[in-house]
Length: 192
Image (cartoon, rainbow, N blue to C red; front, side, top):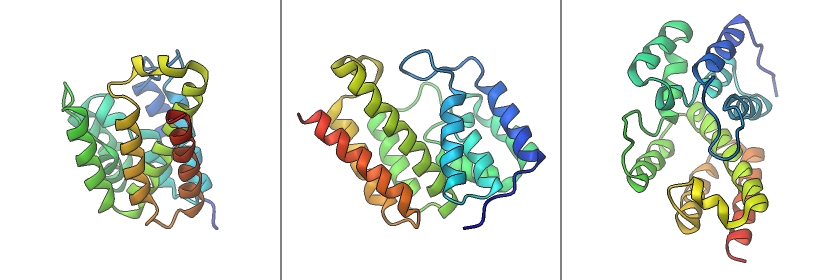
């Protein structure tokens, strides 16, 4: 597996992502949001991702969480069409307020199923990190965790199971296997 050569573009994307999300934290705890973006990027790079895929991992939530169309156009101008296409493929919604949860998730699943391998890689890395975080938070907080989320255990398991069905058709076997382990652990934890 060849490793991506990271250039000044990546450094610029890192600074840009940090600035976009500087006031944002994760849903649980007071963890700076950049931690999620860095984790997703690390997973993409470790899976053999390209520089464009790594930049997209840094920016995958930018359009959705930090400015919609204006941010999309900034990303296009700074980092190019390939990065914008991957970010768009990973964006659930850019409207505020967001559409209802189930509607958003169904649309996202359909979008990911037919997406490019680059979009699927960034999406898988994103959901793997989210799943790892959810598992850890559930182990720490128990059922208190659900006050931070708009849906409960059954809906969450449905979404993760549906994602796994899509991801297992991708070539990212190591990430898929870890995602499967996280999903199985969530099932065990939720159903115990």
